[in-house]
Amino acid sequence: MQNKPHVLFFTPWYPNRYDNMLGLFVRKHAEALSLYAEVSVLFLYADEHIQRFDIVTQSTNGVREIYVYFPFVKYKLLKRFSKLINYCIAFRKGYRTLLLQVRKPDSCQVNILTKSGVWAYLLKKKYHIPYIIIEHWTRYLPADNTYKGFVRKKITEMVVKEASAVMAVSSALKNAMIQCGLKNKNYHTIHNVVDDIFFQKQVKLPHNKCRILYISCFEERQKNMLGILRAIKKLSEYRVDFELIMIGTGVDFEKTINYAKSLNLQDSLVQFLGEQTPREVCNWLYQSDFLLLFSNYETDSVVISESLAVGCPIVSTHIEAIAEKVSDKEGVFVPVADEKALLEALNFMIDHYQDFDVENIRHVGQQYTYQHIGKQLFNIHVNTINKPKD
Image: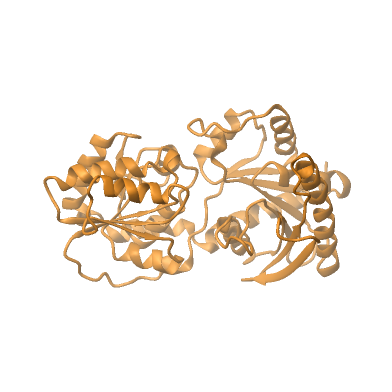
């Protein structure tokens, strides 16, 4: 090992030429670790628009990124087989490119199971390169319950067992993985990173109404936006000294807008702003009075961490992943799917958001900086690299 260890990330989700937001949290983990180690990312993407393999290398904020876009046969009887074969070829091409440009990794990091974990497992068996795993996926949570398939489960169990360490982005997710039979003697919780801009204080500008902010992907099964709108409708029947700003997009974005119209919620009460840049999200958090989430389940809500970083109090459902980050000093909890309790919490918070200590909330948010998360990742990789080989 040279002065800085070389860590190779494998991930099925990563910002790419078709989607700048996919797996952005993985890139942020890579950037955080790159403060202390040399980091490369190998990302393989099945691209229906190309006929030949396309290898793209670039550097983003100190992280070396190797993209391999690979073609596949679109005829449905051959599509799955073609994708699998070309996926394997893409890995070989990408890993060779890495060796030519840099050197063999000292350790690997699997971000999101299961397929990416197989490559790390094979490199360990063939070249004795250790690997760790960090998981983000909600599929293990009982409320989601999409971790299925006999073969998938057996391969996942094998990959997890052979890892030098397993990390989840919340204790809730870690516990869910263990309950799913994913056994490893070295589990950790490593949260997601908050951008530096959220820690740069802004002056709060005056506004006439209490401003409630919702930021999330619009996916009704998980996020329960319609429940929020019903509570807002009832609240508006006896007070109108507030506004709800909803930021984000997703599969149920139009459905949510149409539902708001069916409730006759006026733009003066509810505004849909769509997708916003991180800086715009940061500005809205600083200029709002409290954050609102009404999710049925979460792994590690980045927007909760961002809200803590800026000192913005929170109203949220009491789910484990959020409750481990937020106390009654930072916000108010309601039971999952309890719209009556949400109505009461909103009514209370509109009158009492100023009672929350902004600096105390900001202090809690300091644990999500690049430096803090990067050091945690680095220490686990160093322990993995220095551990005697099996």
